[in-house]
Length: 386
Image (cartoon, rainbow, N blue to C red; front, side):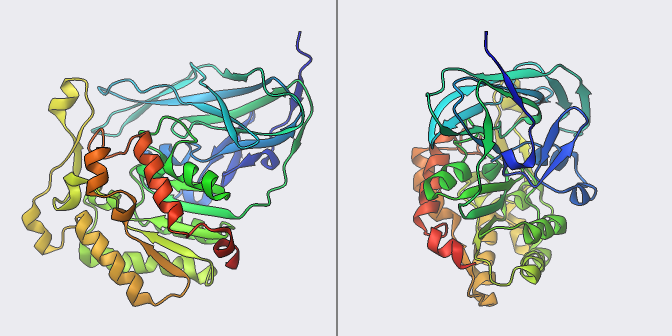
């Protein structure tokens, strides 16, 4: 029989969260603070910010077995194929050792057309990792990047102690691709791969469908301590067809101005959209292909009219050109630009196509990460300059 030690989960053990909400039975990690959540106008962002992309528990221990009690909330789109269970990944002394999932939990039904939701309550479960290596070690439990996870209890067969955070912090904001869509686990999203390769601590503010230049996100980025910050901007604005070029340019300036008001010298990286054929020259909005969905396949299509680009409608090509121009115009010595086509371009698409027409798979996430690290923007020396 295992002689369990229960350790209270506190902020000292959690990395990558902006805020931890006390639910009365545990802690619910958030990627936006409460004041910002109060300003959210879209339930899809409410769902996305509570999914713990990039978050992990980190501690030192001699334990060889551990259990994490959680209450999962699984998102189910009505009419769409069932998604695989979220993945918990165990990392010991920097090496990925095991994966597990927690079945059951709450179910959040989402109508993809009306975005109406229905929550069906469920029961907590256990993420269990036996047979850890003997001896003292640093343990990380990466939480599912696409499944809300309420942290209830941590049990181990040896004491646990927090690990002092000493590495530079990389704060990243982006769309569903940054959030991790189509990656097969929390350590295989491109920001997680890049952070582990560069030796930095990740805070991932990638929000599926919601990298939309929201002022409350700009203020959150400004107010979150970090050594280097990156912003991947563009694709969600074409997805939703929410903005014309006339509004886009000052909105980008305003987003950057808000950040710079409190962080004048922090290294800032602006990343333009990756290659996505359906939106390169065709405006949004983007929609699910109903014929493909009837076959049980999720595919996305752009439904706009390319002739309207002349009237100011946005495409990925338009956005890349404008972002490059904005960076040059601002003449900010601490601002750099990464062309998304360098991270994933037409040749990459030919080799590693987007499975649903919009999101990269795990192999493409790794390529994007490798290319991002190769730019040098996450180098330790550069990060510490800020």
